[in-house]
Length: 367
Image (cartoon, rainbow, N blue to C red; front, top):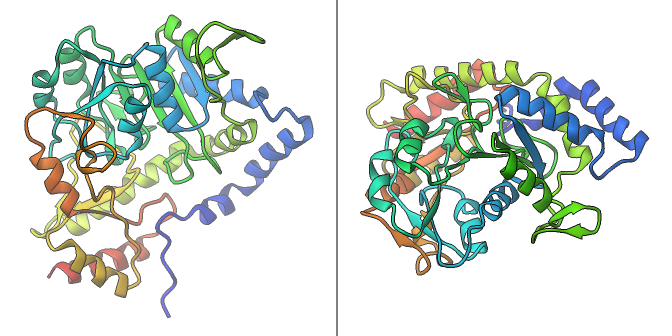
C-alpha cells in the first residue's frame, strides 16, 4: 500500500520545527499576555525589516487586513474598487463590506493574475482603490499597475505570495499597502487565523493600528470606527518560530516548483503557470490547467493523489456578487481558467519520490 500523500503536510513541518515552536508557545503561556503581548511587536518589527517596509501591523486574518486597509482609505458607499474576479472571495467581500462596488477586470491566462493592460479602461470617476491579487505565490505586474493607477491607492492582496520578489523587491512592499495572510496553509502560516498589513505611509499606518483595536487612539478614546482585528500573541509566536526557517522553506518550494515544471512542461495537454524572469514565486499553490478537468481529477483521486480547485467559480458569477459588481470589458480568461485549473500537493517537505508519483499519475490521466 503506498504511503498516503498530504496536500499540505503541516505535520511534517511541525515535526521539523517542534522544539522552537513549543518554546515560543510556552513563553506566551508563561508570561500570560495573550492579547498584544511582546511577540506581537517582535513579529511586526521582524516582518517590516524582512519586506523593507516602514510599518507592519499584524491583524486577525488576511481578510481583516484587506478590510482595515479599505477602512483606513475611507472607502465606502458610492465608491468603486477594481480587482480581479479570479481570486478567493475575501478580495471582493471586503469591498462589499465597506459599501463599495467591486469592479472586475480580466486576468492574464499565463499567470492568472490581473492583466495590467485591461486596467486603464476600468478606471472611472468613482475608482478609489485597486486590489491586484498575487495569486499562487507570484505577484501581479505591480510596476505597470502602479503606473496606471497614478494617485489611486493600490492594495496588494499578497495572501499567497509572502516571500516572493518582484524586480528585487519583496511582495507586500510594492504599493501603497500590502496585505498578507498567515492562514495555516500559506507559505508562512500560523496555527489559526492571522495576517499582516504593510505600508510606508505613516498616516495610514497610524490609522490602521487604531482601526484594528476598535478605532482607539488611546485606551477608551475612539477617534474612528474600528474593528476587533488584533492577531493573538500565540499566533504571532508560532509565526516567529516558523520564520526562522522560512528562507529554507521558500528555497524548497521553488525547487519543488521548478521540478514540477520540468516533469510536466513537455506535455501539451498541461498548462503551467508562467513565472516572469524578473520575479520569484513561493508557490502558495502549485496550479495547472487542463481540459476535461473532472475526468483528470477522478483519475488522480483513484491514484491516491489529493487535489483541490483554486477557484472553480469566478466572483462575478457568485450569487452574492453577480448583481452587485461592475464588469469592465469581458472576463473570458477568468472564466476559462476557472474551468481548467486545479492544484497539486505543494509544501516544503514534499520529497522527490512522492512528487514523481504525483506527476506520473497526472501524465497518465491526461494521456
